[in-house]
Image (cartoon, rainbow, N blue to C red; front, side, top):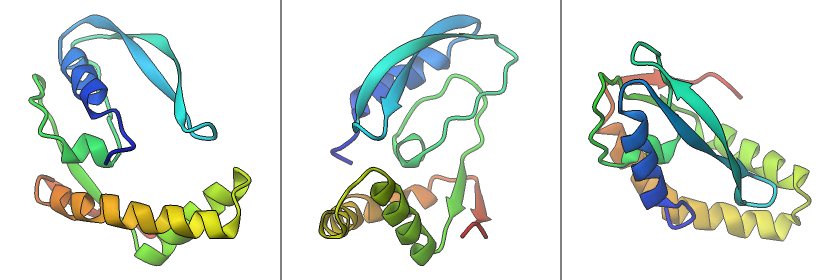
Length: 128
């Protein structure tokens, strides 16, 4: 999880939990693997807001609004293929992609599986 700015994500989650506010939403450039600015978003108290990703489910965030935590399970071969395609599109060499995939398995897999325990629902993805 070291590749994520966990504290910034935690602060952002706290911000969006408030009713009727304007937040600066961080933008992540996945090709450069870094933050790429922000954009402003108005959130009304009756808006439905979807926050997705491993970190959103894994962090112990004290949401101030009603929440429903959904774990989406994807077959490992499909996840690996998607990671491989993504990094190939970014211009990475196969050897680099293999190393990134192995690091992500070590860094993320336990966190992903632990986050299943905090989910209210489990969805099995058929997305290949």
